[in-house]
Image (cartoon, rainbow, N blue to C red; front, side, top):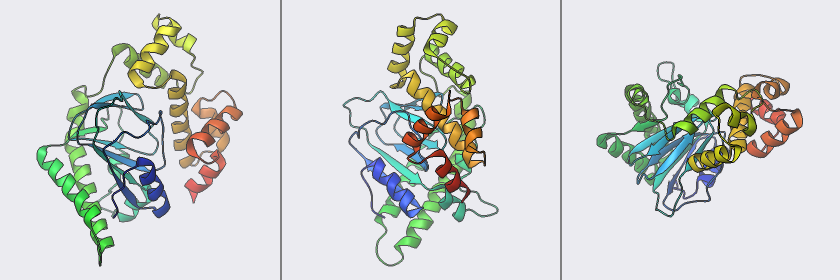
Length: 286
């Protein structure tokens, strides 16, 4: 399998082949704002030195950290600077892991086990890091006769490693307070997510936390790298995608995701996802 050097290209290849793609990144691409996409993402940091905002949780990124993100979780890398940031990103089509799963082993379990205290980050041991990179190299180095079988078998072993690491580690990481950045912003994020399906304005947030509107906007942008409006928009689209995938009608997805009117919902969803809510619902069912 060809090793790619762009997240965008990896996502496009993943969607086109309905399998998976690997990007090995050294240089900073143009930073995406809070976003969601239709593929699973496994993000492995080699150099560390950034922060992740996933839904309403902040994570520092250290060397050897692995992050697991499903297709409904909005996320963004924050604290971008001129430092070299080496990482490996796997884009995985959800149907691919389901096809490879068995009645006894669900390879995409790590993307759906989302209890309230779930921690997206796994701090891999040195042995686990070596095994993870071994499987990545085996996949990207496969060539010639039987390369497809080698790629698939190595991918399955990699997913077993990730699922086992999560099963043994995520409860400990969550209880240790592995996510958190700024208490005020943490509280603001918690409030937004608790009220995400209701109207939430900057004026309302300022009154709730006894802060000025300019100050609350400033600290939120400084901590998350995005604006309050863009964050709320991304979270609501994430909710709408999940509802549509579960069989809800377009009207139900609009009403239950918190958008003020259908026109705003339609425009925001189509811009973020690339297709209309109706088309997305049809694709999810098929």
